[in-house]
Image 1 (tube, rainbow, N blue to C red):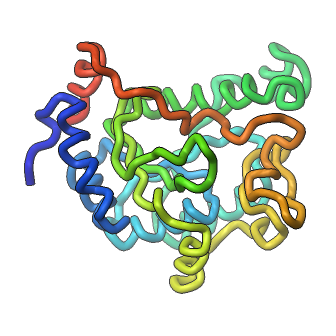
Image 2: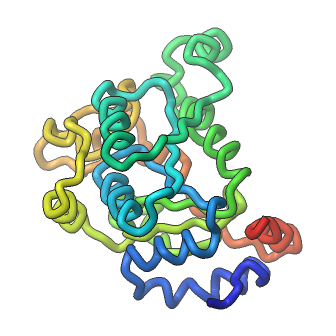
Length: 253
């Protein structure tokens, strides 16, 4: 295998990006694990797509790394699913938290920040914790799909994440919801019990509700606000300056 880690970031990604579009999710995972070793980890909020990716990874490599951003506002069903994942797959989920406890956030920013400024709340409890976590990695693996939101529609299987300064790998980016659920049922994959109660997308308790008949699958997220993303997957342009190349130099460290 070519040593991708010796190339500048633009050449490295361009070299594999087009080829990766024809790879199976399992081959994408294999490439990521072989290329980045312990410097790559799966990020998951344990939605249906995340569970598919976790199960796939377990069939490719037993000791893969898995982390989650625990906002401390998750549903009991989500915490229960975490316990089931650790037991079934024999791994320890790396939990990442905001530097502010919920009580400290309320003292600093006022009560129910999510109801007044959900972008700021997401930044404090999700984006900045993720930034800290990713600063110690060379690549991260996500379970986003292109048809989930307009922001994700141009995502590639392998891409440079300029927002966080590392490689981003999206093995099932071209899958449909139907494919996701077929995999779950075919492989007896555990999933969040809230999916059976009209919650196709599950986040924090304060900002997630069940979806009504006829609504978009993301309608239950941040209801009442013109918001469909927490900010983790906002795609930014690939850097072309020497700064971008210097960030790439850390990939194999």
